[in-house]
Image: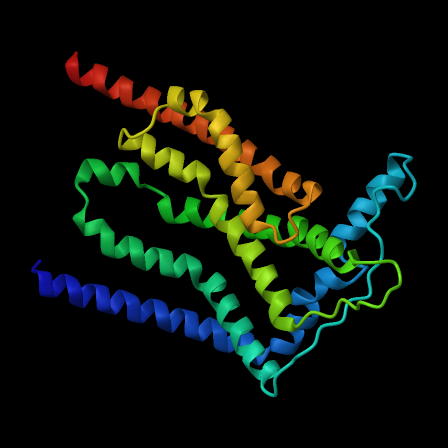
Length: 270
């Protein structure tokens, strides 16, 4: 395939991806009111499912209301004439990308696949499924675990004791924090996949990952601080804990991959 043919193929992959995102975004825009009430604004409700689970757990452990989050009374606002309309478009486009992510990833893989050799294709089997799986898992974690804690903390926090400062953020502020946390967790949860591919191509080994875990802890804390807008210790711990677990999962995956590679090398030399 010539260079021009590659560019043509890339163009159509991009076109198909954009169309998929646009279709998903239009669908979200049509039901934007329901999506806002039941998805976007849900973590602001004191009756959100995460709040109920944590409070029920607190009662079952005979801890009273010690784990229950304090109730909040949030109010969002628009500060520009077209704030509601442009906010709806931004919301629809972001959700459209998340919904179409598996298809966009497939288009990327479809473009890259012809350039890989037969033995390299074996290493990438199931890549679309597993990358999508960890992305969705991260997004769910960001939405159901990280977002409730962060929003509750930020809306509850205030300066002074006289109550003369009112916390009334714009919808754009809230949605920016929400999307950063959800998408940030979706990307951060790709660590096992990164470990898998870097081990496959020989850039890292299980021994290297084990010896570098102290540096990994520092990097994970920095990543957690970037993802979480509040930066408090509790929220940082909520993000850092699963990332550390994913790091050790990456070590396990790297060990298995490295073991299989050594086994294949022994078979080739025998």
